[in-house]
Image 1: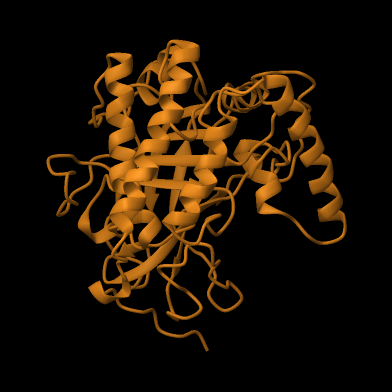
Image 2: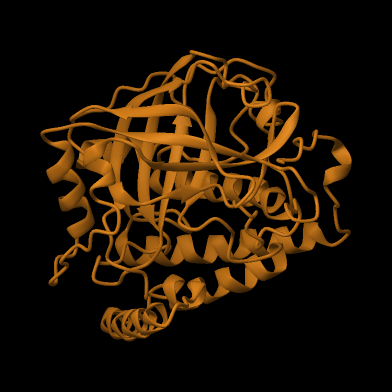
Length: 363
């Protein structure tokens, strides 16, 4: 029998006394990545997830018939919201797609009502920041910082070396999978499969408040055409922007749908809030559908769209309402880090960040 979901209370978080010091180091490391790429390209990219592969607008429709524990926060039964979506890859420099690394999906929900999170007052958006894999690669901010410094150390290094490393890691990862294993580190360093972004599954990896409860968020392919892309390998063959090209091929003529799912916290030991590296078991606590995201046929990536979604706005789990407050030390570390990084990009690019109030994008 499935356990009842755990109710949210402030004591689910345990704040360590030195978190401020780690956050300051994270801000410093993000700054070094952004300043390095700005020097090289004459343009400031995000400290992570610099390269976008799809910049989309769509509609999120909340399901009807939801039980009370799932009809929480913005997930008001039958509600409909305009959304913006950005599909990207992990590194802080815009690498060619021959270097295969994990992907991310950022969602900005517009026209949201509710009591706002600190420093988000006056906005009407709710962001969800997702990536491949059901758990984060670091348990807490110090480990997150260590991983980020590895990324920082490879930023601005000779590209051919990255290509070789990626090819080696990709081969090793295939060998691990053949014997039933896989390595998150190898995938993050260039051994990720050359899979289609529209066929991927994306997860918040770390929890958020879900109204009266606690949850993780997942987004998976729903329409038949997106499902058909699950596990599909893209032939890169030296194509620097292969992912953009393949997504554009699909969305130029047809739209598709994703399903947004929620996994509720039902056991504080098996479903920890502070250890972001632990996947919550799904055997008796699966992700459950709460909404559908519909993307119509459109231009999936253009320079004009990039000027909006890449340069003029930022995505952060701290853009949102109190009912979906980010939880855990990794989420707390993201608040200042993401805000400072966005401000720095805005200054270097001469393009201050703004929260959009309309979902339309240029073609």
